[in-house]
Image (tube, rainbow, N blue to C red):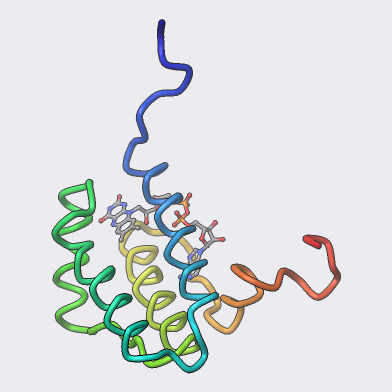
Length: 116
Ligand code: FAD
């Protein structure tokens, strides 16, 4: 039998990965325990090694050296990730995202209730 869907290309993989990462950041504790911090740092630091798009992983590693992850709390992590994603957006010629709206985009939805 043939698979019903094709394997992801780097765009589809990217969309799925950003969805996971931004959502994980939006639900990350406001006051993380040392265990939370260690686990998140370990997850993020694994990406330049394990992310299955070589040029993306390589670039991310360089960015993370210049701008290390801030896992000190939900707002800080969400902002860090938004900045990293914006750097990729910029490089790909895409619009920058307004980082004051990450919690609305990835956790609460718009105030008009249209996502409830
Ligand atoms: P995506 O960029 O996938 O974004 C998905 C949704 O996130 C958007 O619709 C928007 O609602 C929201 N969003 C957009 N920007 C932000 C932000 N700053 N903060 C919060 N939410 C936001 N592709 C390459 O071609 N070259 C690369 O080097 C590359 N590196 C990547 C590195 C990583 C770690 C990841 C996860 C992906 C990378 N990609 C790369 C893929 C690329 O970023 C996109 O995912 C892909 O091009 C699909 O783009 P898209 O326009 O569908 O939206």
